[in-house]
Image (cartoon, rainbow, N blue to C red; front, side, top):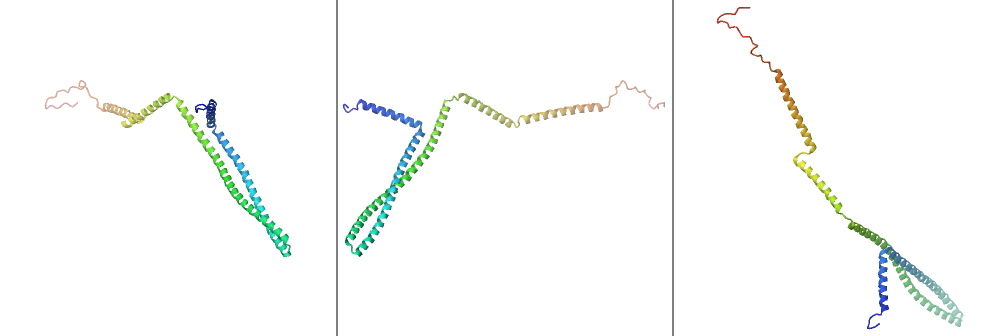
Length: 255
């Protein structure tokens, strides 16, 4: 290092470390399910190790409890042996038994202290084991939830990209044409409604008007024929005979 600046090799290591870290992050983002599987597998491995440790602690606890029970029973027997030796007046045996009993008391005290510590460790280990198991289950649930969210986000992203990549000019023109056609049809219906008639009703009424006109024309023709046929015929003047003049007061001769 010169003038406080890092050497070439240190800079190269830093560069490669940055490139490698960036590559790893990209791969992790591409394969999140692999990252979750690795994290879950590591948690499971640690859980098994902790479980083995808890089993060892529980074994030590049970062993200490058994040893303490044996020592207490042995101390009770020594107490009876001391009483018998004292009654017999065997002072040397009594002293030896008392010394042995005191040594057992000391061992019992140490064992009880160790048992108390082991019990605390066992309780903490069991609590940690349960918590670790719940963390693994929570991580499994998180994996399912996050992968589902990621799949949904990727699908929406692909859909958005597909929509943005499409040319919608032709579709919009066709849609506008359909809208205009529908609007015209609606307006035509409104015009017919404003006129008070639609096409079918208008044609029916028109036929009715024409049928009525034909009936009136036929009736007029019929009346004309009836009037012509029932009128008496007129006699021409040249056909009527001229009357002979008769004098006044004369009576025409009888035929």
